[in-house]
Image (tube, rainbow, N blue to C red; front, side, top):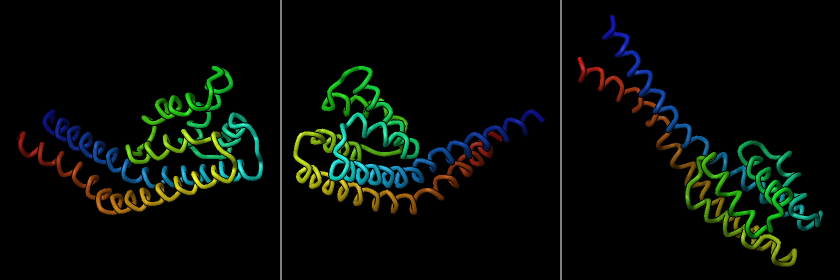
Length: 171
C-alpha cells in the first residue's frame, strides 16, 4: 500500500513538473505578443497623447494584462514614489519584473534597448525605435511559437513518462 502511494506521488510530481515546464513554452509567445501590444500603446501615447512617461506607465498598468501590467506598475512606482529618472527606472523595473515571465534573454535585450531610447528623442525618431523593437519582438514571437509547437506537448508527456520510468526502476 505504501509502495503504491509512493509510486503515485512520484508520477504526480513528475507530471506536474512536466506541466510547469510546458507552461513556459505556452506563455512565452503570449507574453511577447503582450509586449508588442504595449509598445504599440506606447507609440500611440507618444505620437498622439504626448503625456509624461510616468502617467503613460500608469495608464498601461491598467490597460494591459498580467504580467506586463506588473512591469508598468513597478516602473510608475519607481518614477513617482522613488523619484527615479526613466533611464534608471526602466532597467530596475525589468530586473524586478523579469523573473515573473517565461521570456528569454533575447526579448530582455530588445526591451532594455528600447527602454534606453525611450524619452530621449523626438516623436518621429521614437516611433522608429518602437518599430525596430516591434520587428525584433515579432521575430522572437515566431521563434517562440515554433518552439511551443515542437516542445509543449512533448514536455508534458516526458514528465509523465519520467515518473513511470522512476517507478519501474524503483520496483
